Image 1 (cartoon, helix red, strand yellow):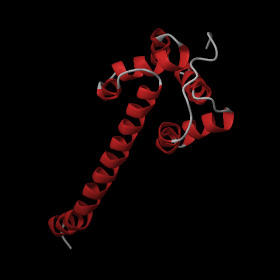
Image 2 (tube, rainbow, N blue to C red):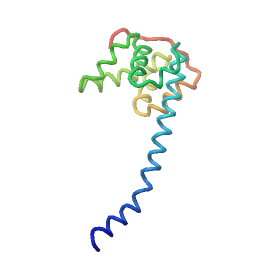
Image 3 (cartoon, one colour):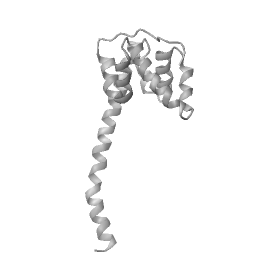
Image 4 (cartoon, one colour):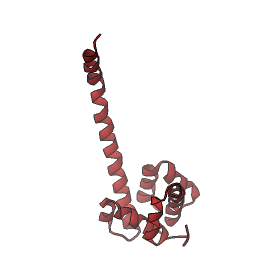
Length: 131
């Protein structure tokens, strides 16, 4: 078997997998955007802010912490992991939920964002002023 016939058979078998995963990835992204749209509206912000890259992170931190400036901590290596963990827990608390919901937001974000967005939970505002 020469190299060209091997590559032809490889391309024929591997070309379909990328399309399915791309469609799945797009669907998951759209679900996340819709969930954040509703979370923003519950928090008193305009829903369209969820579709603007980088600015949506600013608004998310403003909803959770009361200040968008803390999102700049995501640019610091290693600290960004701690900040994201704290953000997930504070997000759940801002909507009146506990640490279990926050851990759900951390490990299965789109699922738990949808639960917060479409569930009966009300936005109560930031619970802590520090990290």
